[in-house]
Image (tube, rainbow, N blue to C red; front, side, top):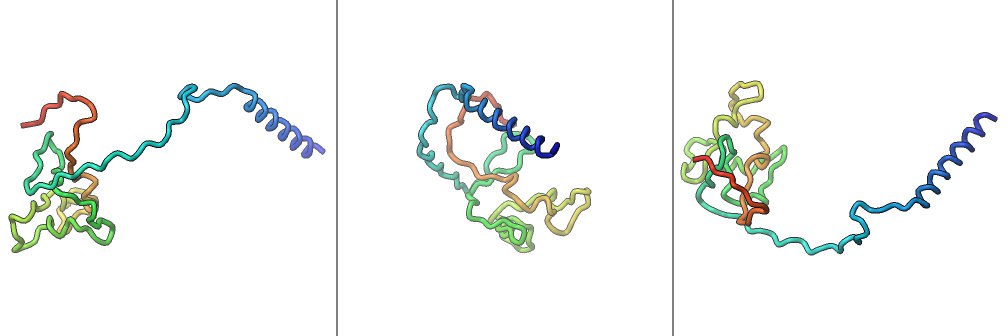
Length: 144
Protein backbone atom coordinates (compact mmCIF):
# COMPACT_ATOMS: atom_id res chain seq x y z
CA UNK A 1 0.00 0.00 0.00
CA UNK A 2 2.77 2.44 0.92
CA UNK A 3 4.61 1.62 -2.31
CA UNK A 4 1.61 2.32 -4.58
CA UNK A 5 0.77 5.61 -2.82
CA UNK A 6 4.39 6.74 -3.30
CA UNK A 7 4.13 6.06 -7.05
CA UNK A 8 0.82 7.94 -7.31
CA UNK A 9 2.25 10.87 -5.37
CA UNK A 10 5.37 10.95 -7.61
CA UNK A 11 3.32 10.90 -10.81
CA UNK A 12 1.05 13.68 -9.48
CA UNK A 13 4.10 15.83 -8.62
CA UNK A 14 5.55 15.32 -12.09
CA UNK A 15 2.26 16.24 -13.77
CA UNK A 16 1.88 19.38 -11.64
CA UNK A 17 5.45 20.39 -12.52
CA UNK A 18 4.81 19.90 -16.25
CA UNK A 19 1.54 21.84 -16.06
CA UNK A 20 3.39 24.69 -14.34
CA UNK A 21 5.96 24.84 -17.12
CA UNK A 22 3.25 24.93 -19.79
CA UNK A 23 1.41 27.73 -18.00
CA UNK A 24 4.58 29.75 -17.31
CA UNK A 25 5.46 32.59 -19.66
CA UNK A 26 8.87 31.42 -20.84
CA UNK A 27 10.97 33.81 -22.89
CA UNK A 28 13.92 32.99 -25.07
CA UNK A 29 17.32 34.42 -24.21
CA UNK A 30 17.23 36.16 -27.60
CA UNK A 31 13.98 37.91 -26.63
CA UNK A 32 11.05 38.08 -29.01
CA UNK A 33 13.35 37.84 -32.01
CA UNK A 34 12.67 34.89 -34.28
CA UNK A 35 15.35 32.34 -35.03
CA UNK A 36 17.23 33.67 -38.07
CA UNK A 37 17.19 31.68 -41.28
CA UNK A 38 20.30 29.73 -42.09
CA UNK A 39 22.78 31.86 -43.96
CA UNK A 40 24.94 30.60 -46.78
CA UNK A 41 28.32 29.26 -45.75
CA UNK A 42 31.15 31.80 -46.04
CA UNK A 43 33.46 31.53 -49.03
CA UNK A 44 36.46 29.33 -48.43
CA UNK A 45 39.68 31.28 -48.26
CA UNK A 46 42.61 30.33 -50.46
CA UNK A 47 45.62 28.97 -48.64
CA UNK A 48 48.89 30.81 -49.04
CA UNK A 49 51.08 28.41 -51.01
CA UNK A 50 54.62 29.80 -50.89
CA UNK A 51 57.99 28.26 -51.43
CA UNK A 52 59.39 30.47 -48.66
CA UNK A 53 58.93 29.92 -44.95
CA UNK A 54 56.40 32.12 -43.16
CA UNK A 55 58.04 34.55 -40.73
CA UNK A 56 57.37 33.82 -37.05
CA UNK A 57 55.63 36.52 -35.03
CA UNK A 58 56.52 35.52 -31.46
CA UNK A 59 59.16 33.54 -29.58
CA UNK A 60 58.68 29.77 -29.41
CA UNK A 61 56.07 29.92 -32.19
CA UNK A 62 55.94 26.67 -34.16
CA UNK A 63 56.81 27.31 -37.82
CA UNK A 64 53.76 27.96 -39.96
CA UNK A 65 53.23 25.69 -42.95
CA UNK A 66 53.86 27.57 -46.22
CA UNK A 67 51.70 25.08 -48.18
CA UNK A 68 48.35 23.33 -47.90
CA UNK A 69 48.17 20.05 -46.04
CA UNK A 70 44.46 19.30 -46.05
CA UNK A 71 44.91 16.20 -48.25
CA UNK A 72 47.82 14.80 -46.24
CA UNK A 73 47.10 11.57 -44.42
CA UNK A 74 48.07 11.85 -40.76
CA UNK A 75 46.89 8.99 -38.56
CA UNK A 76 48.41 6.40 -36.22
CA UNK A 77 49.85 4.38 -39.11
CA UNK A 78 51.08 7.08 -41.50
CA UNK A 79 52.16 10.71 -41.59
CA UNK A 80 52.57 12.29 -45.02
CA UNK A 81 54.56 15.22 -43.55
CA UNK A 82 57.42 12.88 -42.70
CA UNK A 83 58.03 12.11 -46.40
CA UNK A 84 59.64 15.54 -46.83
CA UNK A 85 60.49 16.76 -43.34
CA UNK A 86 62.08 13.69 -41.69
CA UNK A 87 65.88 13.79 -41.48
CA UNK A 88 67.20 11.46 -44.16
CA UNK A 89 70.81 10.95 -45.24
CA UNK A 90 71.44 12.18 -48.79
CA UNK A 91 68.11 14.01 -48.96
CA UNK A 92 67.88 17.15 -51.10
CA UNK A 93 68.47 19.90 -48.52
CA UNK A 94 66.67 22.58 -50.57
CA UNK A 95 63.46 20.53 -50.76
CA UNK A 96 62.12 21.21 -47.28
CA UNK A 97 63.01 22.20 -43.74
CA UNK A 98 63.93 19.23 -41.59
CA UNK A 99 62.30 18.75 -38.20
CA UNK A 100 64.23 20.18 -35.29
CA UNK A 101 65.93 18.04 -32.67
CA UNK A 102 63.11 18.84 -30.24
CA UNK A 103 60.86 16.46 -32.21
CA UNK A 104 63.14 13.55 -31.24
CA UNK A 105 63.05 14.08 -27.46
CA UNK A 106 60.57 11.98 -25.50
CA UNK A 107 58.40 13.35 -22.74
CA UNK A 108 60.91 12.12 -20.15
CA UNK A 109 63.65 14.24 -21.80
CA UNK A 110 65.53 11.31 -23.36
CA UNK A 111 66.77 11.72 -26.95
CA UNK A 112 65.18 9.13 -29.26
CA UNK A 113 66.33 7.68 -32.59
CA UNK A 114 62.79 8.11 -33.94
CA UNK A 115 60.12 10.80 -33.90
CA UNK A 116 58.66 11.29 -30.40
CA UNK A 117 55.08 10.03 -30.14
CA UNK A 118 53.79 13.41 -28.95
CA UNK A 119 55.10 15.02 -32.14
CA UNK A 120 53.44 12.63 -34.63
CA UNK A 121 50.37 14.77 -35.34
CA UNK A 122 52.04 17.79 -36.97
CA UNK A 123 48.87 19.80 -37.57
CA UNK A 124 48.35 20.28 -33.83
CA UNK A 125 51.05 22.97 -33.99
CA UNK A 126 51.99 23.58 -37.63
CA UNK A 127 49.15 25.16 -39.59
CA UNK A 128 48.82 26.61 -43.10
CA UNK A 129 47.84 30.24 -43.52
CA UNK A 130 45.10 31.93 -45.50
CA UNK A 131 45.13 35.42 -46.93
CA UNK A 132 42.32 36.86 -44.80
CA UNK A 133 41.59 40.20 -43.19
CA UNK A 134 41.79 40.15 -39.39
CA UNK A 135 38.42 39.73 -37.70
CA UNK A 136 39.20 42.46 -35.18
CA UNK A 137 41.80 45.19 -34.91
CA UNK A 138 45.02 44.54 -33.04
CA UNK A 139 48.12 46.46 -32.00
CA UNK A 140 50.25 43.29 -31.80
CA UNK A 141 53.91 43.89 -32.66
CA UNK A 142 55.91 41.01 -34.11
CA UNK A 143 59.20 39.97 -32.50
CA UNK A 144 62.21 41.01 -34.57
